[in-house]
Length: 313
Image (cartoon, rainbow, N blue to C red):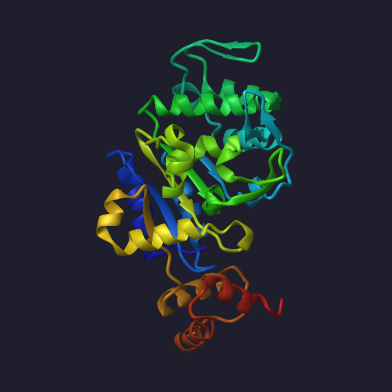
């Protein structure tokens, strides 16, 4: 993974969001294999190094492909819990952020009750995570409490980073009681995070008053698109991102700020090959000519460059 100019642009926006509130999510878009996930990871790493609280998932296709158990909410059977998945997600949030500084500074500001367990003001949000991890049936409620605490403070910057963000706007492989495929926003795990990224125009008409966007008071929501699984590509999201990137008026009204992650330049290809040589992925040092040839053969696509370099391993 190399640090690109576009990585610097994204990280500058991350840093800026810790000082000036944003009203748009940041969406990394581009060709398959262009390095969107790598840039997202670099943003996550930068935030963690700076002491942010980071909610991150590097893979969300499994959130919508019906591979996890689900059940309808009793009070609203059009929405669905994924208790096991949500509990595991809380565990990953805890693992990523568990340090003494965040434990002592991210505290509840009021009392909460989760199931039969009472949490008092001044307890750590990590106590909330622990309840959701140990009791999966309380995991969604624990996530909601965590988000409400993060929404009500500005001492610690917060990042919500989701790869394969298109899944949030897709039609899932889960089905409802009438055997009709469920839209992703009816899965409560996704539904709790979606307002930080913003809704698509079609969602406003179908959800009505339930489509209130949320802004992180200090920090940002950042996502990366993926087209690796065509079942979860959102054509409406793709269309909105394309329109917003080209039309300043649409950008002003949009919930999204798209950033295109281009394929590598010849110079970046040379730097990547140097990195591969130092990592012993390739045996010989690159030359300007060999790098240019590989760049031309792969159109500078990082995924294709990697596959070309490892095809004989």
